[in-house]
Image (cartoon, rainbow, N blue to C red; front, side, top):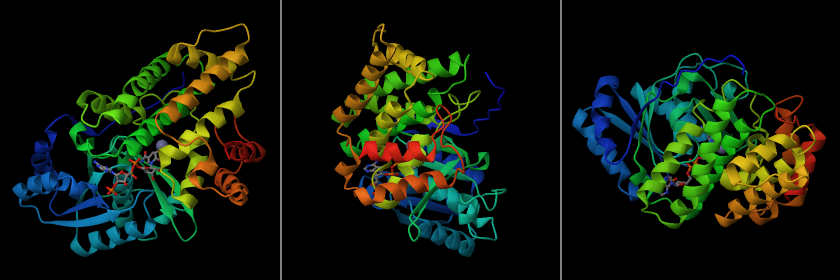
Length: 389
Ligand code: NZQ
Ligand code: ZN
């Protein structure tokens, strides 16, 4: 295992009715508040009402920025930065899923920077300061509620870029599974896939002697496999929604990826898809992930697939190790299909002529190879895009 530092600083309030902690937390931390939310779900399903009820108790003046899109847009981040500067905001509360929380984080670091916030995403500048951010989570998927990552789309150049910094871990997050009852089945399914692929990106590694991380990862995968279908089928199954919500936060808070090299090639490929086609992130991952697995399966990687199959899917090892590995990959693909996920890029409206463009963009930011488990060359990335079509 490699050396690592880990400081998960986000305070979590988990469970039914935990919104009552909001007033006290804000009172201790905020003087002028910006509440960021999505297009309409938080308002429509009464979550914003609960939030504003708590804020009113504190008598802290507050402003609202709503209408954040899924695959959130840079233009909304600029608007948030303008509003924060104009109203001298000192604390940002995100009420939503990953898109809303990511936008809140980008606003928070953009306010403190004299240049263009996009510089952080293109690596022209580094985040050195930010307003504090907190979250009321309404959809389990991205893990943004407990990590310092954000992903923002610039629509004029069709770029979707990710950024991570410890400075932007939310100071606290409220996770009430009841707030996810209104999430449509399709978005629950996309969330389950996103969580599983976050785990894959950290689990599939060439590093040895990372048994703690691997066993934690396998446990979280089994939770997704057991509770994902129940959460999709039954909106008010509190226990399943709770398992998925907590698994989502743990999957990407740093716990299972430290001490080893992690991959992320599937995510970089998917970001190019959702940058152009505005596909839900989890649906894009459901397409790419099994194709990536098939592509990287070789003599150097097969043992990890065997281990994954045996421990997570109970696939017995056979003499033909490649056959066993392929069986495991097929199980992964059919699990995603059983949740209602698309299997091919053509299923989400992708045009064949865009494949090369997306594949080239996926490689652009990383100079050389994409991923670490089996470093993908440009040629591999192109083959994966075509195989996924
Ligand atoms: O816009 P509204 O009306 O709020 O509707 C949203 C949106 O349509 C809806 N929704 C959210 N909570 C709901 C609800 N509908 C009913 N009831 C509720 N309680 O769900 C839709 C999707 O929301 P979104 O926030 O986009 O989903 P998600 O949490 O999956 O976030 C996706 C974004 O996160 C990024 C993705 O790339 C994508 O842009 N990621 C962020 C990461 C991070 N910060 O660590 C890591 C991830 O890998 C991911 O890349
Ligand atoms: Zn993801």
